[in-house]
Structure formats: structure tokens, C-alpha cells
Image (cartoon, rainbow, N blue to C red):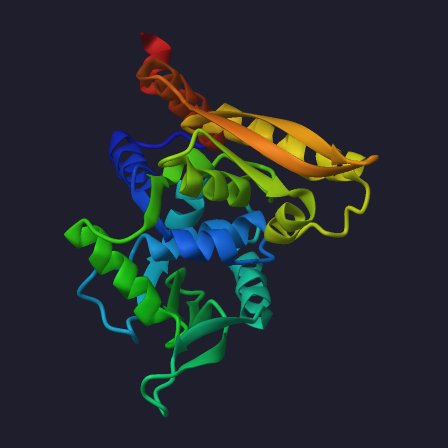
Length: 275
């Protein structure tokens, strides 16, 4: 059972969990990120803090205690753990396509990591981060697009992904949500899906299904706003294509999903238990 929280604390936590997360479709559909569950939650939490009026060198400071409470994470030494997590994230670098500042009208590739600035304060229990300067304009453009109602992006409630336990669940959920806007089904080549989920080390489809696909689908169906099923097609003896079918949950189903998610995160008694 989790530590009992005051009504004020619960209200604040649930408000932040109800924050909408916005991700650009192109980044979701083409990106490949090797991230743990905590790393994914940390990035999404940081993205949720971005405002359209921020500048590209904006710094974001948050309480570590608050972050862990929102994510429902229990840690014996959360300060040491978050330092290790941030260091690991700093090591992960990938390429993004951008306008070349030294050659206007052309594009270049920039090697970026998620965070350019990382500062921790053990006494205050706060963490300060800044996104990589070459990545920030991209995130700011997304923030401005959603403010103006344009652009191509995916949105969902933060609380739908917080209880997920499979490291592949959030990534698969975001991918499917990015296609769900106009499609109730979407297919992938199995090798491409493995690349997008960063699990190409599962050479046999049986292992991919057991350790990546099934746990992710279970989390998505249990905690998110959609229910998914899938079918496979073979090319000869080899499974080559996987097709996902997506159904939006009803209002009542989403309410039950949210209740289950909050109980999973907190392990405590909520207002509906007395109804």
C-alpha cells in the first residue's frame, strides 16, 4: 500500500497526471529511441512543461519528490537513481535533420542528446534540465502548433502511460495513436517494428511476441484509452507483417481504465472506493 496522501496532495498529483502530452507524428513514426521506462516518463514529463513562449535555451526545474509521486515510483535512494538515469540519457545520441545555420537554404544533420543541461541539488531535491539547443526549436514549434490548432501531432493523457510496466508499451502506444486519427488499423513489417521498438535482438518472432509484443499490448489494453488486437501474415514460413486493429474505449471503459491506473500507481484507497 502506498503512503496516504492529503486531499490537496492528491488533487495536485492528479492534475499533473491529467496533463496532455503532445508528440509530433514524424518523430514518433520515424524515430528510434533506446529508453527505459523511467527515461521515457522523465522525457514526457519534461515535454509537458514546455510552453509556446519559451526560448530554445529554456531551463526546466522540477521537484524529484513530485516527479516520483506523479509516476508512482517507489525508490529507496531516488536521488542517486535519478542521477544515474540522467547520466545514461546524456550518453544516448542520435541525428536530427535541421536547417543549416551556416548555409541557409540547405539542411544538415545534428547529433543531439535529450538534455544539454543537467543539474541536481540534493539539499532541495530538485532537478534542472534543458533540452539540446538544436532540438528545442523543434519542440517549441510543436508547442506553438498545438496552441494555434495546426500541425500534425499526437496527443494523449499522461496518466494513460504512467502505469505501464513494459518498456515497449509506451513506444507502441504512441506509434499506434499517431496513426489512429484517420485509421482504425495499421500494419508494419515485423523487422521495421522491431527497429522502432528497439528490440531487434529478438531474432525469433516467438521471442519478440513473448517478451515485447504481448506485455506491451497487455499494458495498452489495461491502462490506455484504446483496445488493440493484431494479426500476422507470413512470407513463406517467416512472419513478415503484423497488422494492429485499434478501437477507442467508451467513456465508461476509460473511467474504469483510469481508476485501475491510479490504483496501480498509488496502491491506495481513492474516492471511488467509498461509493
